[in-house]
Length: 136
Image 1 (cartoon, rainbow, N blue to C red):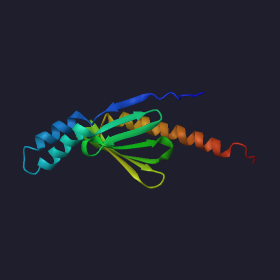
Image 2: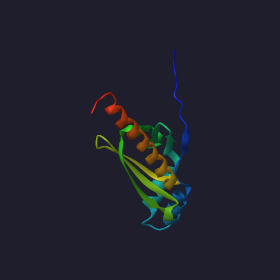
Image 3: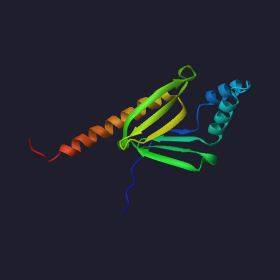
């Protein structure tokens, strides 16, 4: 008998379109060419999947690198707004000290709130289960 746990998708897709447009405009200058190339690579191969159970990031050359993190592994979330707050960069600091960077996350303020809510739910459930069965 197998049981499946419901997993609701909050966001699934690529980086913010505004990041690509802004960097392509910046690429018209000689200094902005590397930024434009980086934005094109992100637009082609970077994909985010944020669900009620985990955060998955596919990226790297041709999108072959994949990282998955469950909310109980996240100890801290750091965010930096970009594009006048339309999109932003996030860093998930994991409990073992490693980091997962998420660049050009669209609607990042809502995404940040969603991830923080899940982290709080997981840590609250973890705290209760740690002390269950112990008498004071």
